Amino acid sequence: MGPEETDVTALITRAAAPDPEKRAEAAFDLATAVTGRGDDPALAALIRLTRDTAPAVRDRAAFALGALADVDGPAVRAALAERLDDADRDTREEAVRGLALRRDPRAAPLLRELLEAGAGPGEAHPHTVEAAAVLADAALLPALRRYPPQEPGVAEALDACDPRRRALRDRGAAALLEEVHRLLPGADAAVSAHRMEAAPTLTMTVAGDPLTWNVDRLLARADGDPLRAAALVVRDAGALPSADRTA
Image 1 (cartoon, rainbow, N blue to C red):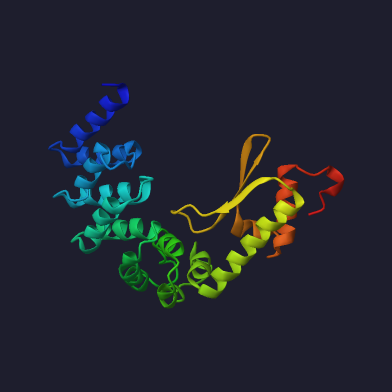
Image 2 (image 1 turned 90 degrees about the vertical axis):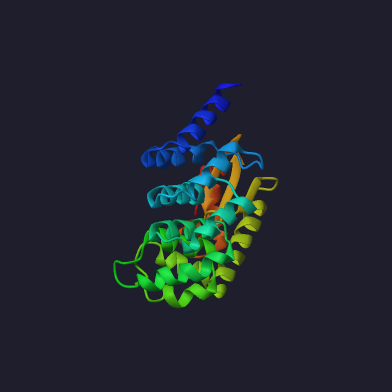
């Protein structure tokens, strides 16, 4: 048995400790140890903790599985879905967040309830709004519109959930990528969206080093113009002679 296997075995032992606080701590550590394989013992132990008898342990385990563990799959989603009607409110909120971050439509009804329950100046829970932005469900728009758009994350969630605005962003991202390839033929550039992030990311490898740009922020820098945004990418990457850095 290698060192990594020994560490996981120790974590699984801690996850079964009589002390709820130790079990809760083990949930955080298991989140960094999961591999997502079907036979992953760390993932199985973490899922068991989401069903713990202690609410505080379920809460932390749901957070660890939903937001910290970079894994997905039927077993992960089923475990989070089980907690959508948990007696503990914090556990429910972590479960709906975890499902939303995986763009699972089962998150929408409870997420809408959470948004409606907290609507008002200064009451937008950052994690709930972040989850709404990733889920990008138009059914969340009425609840989101009750929040001041200047609240953290609200404007981004509104843009993501509005089909028209989302289509404009998608077209802008596509035009941006096309222009980057026109300016830099053969560039190793791509636009993608991490399953747990709302905004797409432009990634380009320059001299062996990966560079990344948040597409929404990049387009904002360029006043919404994809062609100017592409010129900014080229300038940021230092790929043009100084005389051409006009963006």
